[in-house]
Image (cartoon, rainbow, N blue to C red):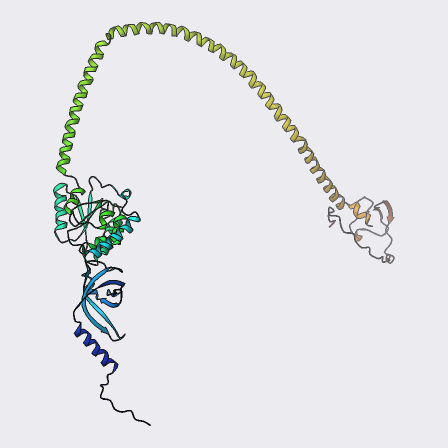
Length: 475
């Protein structure tokens, strides 16, 4: 067996080599600044962000830990060009290197503006910015809901301005207005206000204000997120957007019902000036009182003119009284004639009604008699048939129970000299005369002396006929 010659090259284990590579890469590239386009962007359940940075020739895996993602002023999306700062490291378990990002920003305002313009066109095509979808603001809301940061000058300016113009109840839904979590909280606030039911423990706002102070494009980027724009568009409560300064424009401004240049201007749009309303009411009241006085004076002048054109009431009353007396006399005469004519007509009608009623009564009685006669004949026939059947049944039963039927079967009735029926042999004496009744007649006989009767010749029994259904039993 040939032996392998010894080598002076150091022999590493896999772990030692991976560790050495990791230290070399981290020492050489402990802090780098990389510009590239975002490819795959994945957010893990842990909160970490995994993404690819690429250009036309290469791709580098990158990771941003959960604590760093909270400081992002915009949402990383595929296709966005960014500048990332961090360090290179390796992942020994997969023999891969990756960029650990500690800070990331868009690669200039142009990249964000291009993305903003593309998103604006998409949402506009869906009708989210249509003027027909806008709702009018209430003139004097009872409750105003404000979605903003609870700390800062914005909420103080809004509360001060509303209290100064026309004090109203204000509900504040605190949210982050910058950073990666800001869009999610703003959407939840808008939907939360809309989910409040009228008449509940918490009053439902009549108007919403989504507000934030000025800032860079990156600072205001949360209000350009698609979820925020859709939430503002879907709000049933009228919504004022007051994001940034007058020169700042975000997509929520196009989806809201009205845009305010500043948060203070939003408060001015929300409520009118109470003093102005009082002045308007007083002015309107004074104009109404003046108009009423002028109307009364005009009517009084017209009434005086009409009164002068009218004749004296005494003359009118006398003329009308005379006309009334004349009409009363004519009415009395006409009423008497009318009553007489009506009485004659009524008497004639009454006589005709009596004759007609009598005729109707006769016709009705005749009809009823005919109906009863028609019903009586079948009823009498049915009753007679029922009695006939009952009589036949009773006759059959009587015939079956009669002694004559018994005599026809070969029996005889024995009577003594007195004609009394003999019911037993012991009642007869030797030499006593008797009469015997058969089915076809009677015969006389005399009892013999105490001699025994001649022997009886047995005859074959005849088969008994079944009794008739109507025949009763002799016994």
